Image (cartoon, rainbow, N blue to C red; front, side, top):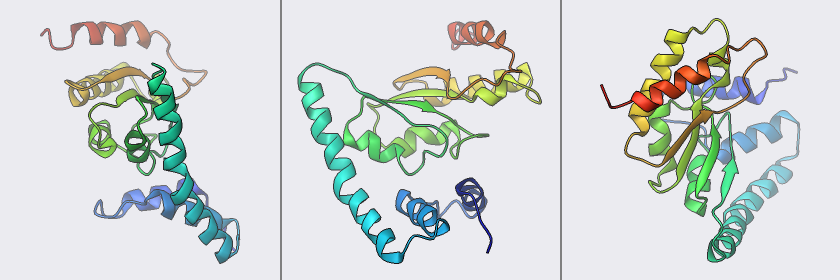
Amino acid sequence: MQLVSIDSFVMKEQNRSREHQPKLLELLNFALRSRHYSPRTEQTYCIWVKRFMAGGHKKRLERLHSAGTACAVHLDGVVRGLLPKLAAAGFDAVEALTPQPVGDLDVGEMRTVAGNDSVILWGGVPGIMFAPPYTWDDMEKHVVKTLGAWKGSRFILGVADQVPPDGDIGFCPRIAELVENFGNE
């Protein structure tokens, strides 16, 4: 018996044609199968996700919005399946969006995948890029690409996951300078 992690499944799926990307329920099915859940349990979990997840979020969000409360949700890593569902449910922001090379989406794809121009994309800078083998040149190119991809839309640029212990925190003021000067050249 070969055990396969969800991460290796996603990596395999990313290398397949861009025409087919794993959806939330496909990832759930794989996770349940890899843990040897019965087919009936797998079917029940998928029905439960379809039936209760979006509706429950929408009802809570409507109540919170009517009380004047903005709502954000934390989502990082593999986001392709959930990002459009959370945006459609009515969250005001989706926080900790981790793009490639760590996550499953390029920063340029995130707005399109969200499918909702009013949701705030929050993140965009993978923490791993603060540490070797990445350099300031790599980080600068990534930040400029992110600013260009998200320009004209609602976003908060931030570190999308944890900065490793060997990360260069000195990149932060340099990123701030890039943001301040973006579009002024």
